[in-house]
Image (cartoon, rainbow, N blue to C red; front, side, top):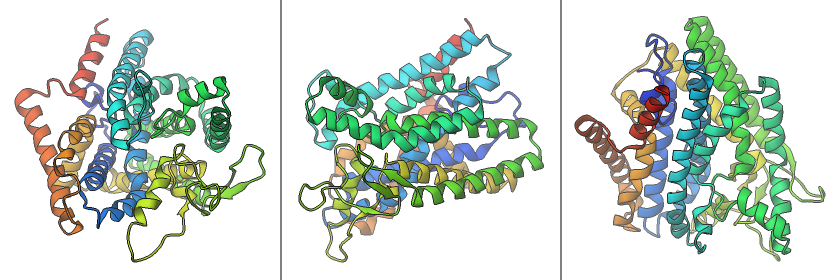
Length: 420
């Protein structure tokens, strides 16, 4: 199968079909399968077993939404470099801008539903703004195009600076908002949003760092030699190990005045003015709520959540990037170097090709069985739900040519851009 990293997969197939990196589709497919399983657990597990969701999602978030976002930003490299020299720069730019804006529109439509699901009340039109997965993927398509103007070293430096200082900047904006500063409140609304699932800070750094490794991937694919592939594998493996270690042990300032520094391994709790005055603010870091969910059981009390597992912290960003590199390295080794292939791998690759559509249609059926299933049947109904969605997509593509899917829309936009 040809590499199709972007959601508009069919439009970005490499012309030379002998040069491909199938593992990227596999990794993206794995991420969307995990996202579907996590959402099904959140909606369908009964109250006695809901803590399982808190435990597993805290540990596995890195292989779901975070990995999905990373791959989406990385995809721009392939769109640009494949077409460079073949199409005018203006056509390439307009195609990327248009696709990004279409995905952002999906994010705007999706935001009110996200707020409703989270129990947040935000009035119109403010409820249309929020950094969900769609919003960031659309933004990353556009921003990553301009990031490519920088060389790799500059991208790496800027990305690291953004990751390291983002919590500090967001804390300034939060305290300013709470103090009634209108300018800081407005900036907080734009940068964090009412429901900061994937806020622009620190996730902006993804655009800088993912494009570096997108360049490495593309160069190896064009060379197509075993030597180039093994070199790429080692590069992902080494950087992955380094970033995981950095995420766990790096010390980051967590206060505006720089008087409080915290390592990634430190256990944190949700902010409480009496019990945890230095705790994590839930409205800024939504995943700290997973600790509360995980403690909804009588077996063992969890005293806190390691900072490197709390999404949007600097430590978590380094850790997530490291795990993403390691996971890509392993998949790349077995699928592209060792040429492993079976029905399961092909199945997951298909999910990677249709990931954006799957992400959308999964929500159509989640309200049907809210809080009705015990954990005993989770492997049955969880994997069954994934299979059901895959069957729907197969029928949609085979018998209706995928008309109306986000991938189809992206393909049409790309085709019209190429004819200009």
